[in-house]
Length: 75
Image (cartoon, rainbow, N blue to C red; front, side):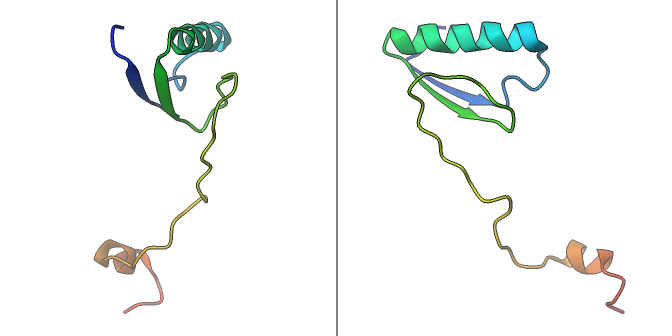
């Protein structure tokens, strides 16, 4: 693709091992040409000299009305 910045959300989720290797090659090639890639994923994707931002499993949040409906101890 002819875009300098790629934003990829779970790009390998439906790929087999060969597909992941191809994706890793395409990402590496894009980066070698000066491109930037942001990848949001739960599955490992190999990228040389990558910077990782690991978020905690869950951010604290307020209880919603739907959460209250799911709780058995609230009448």
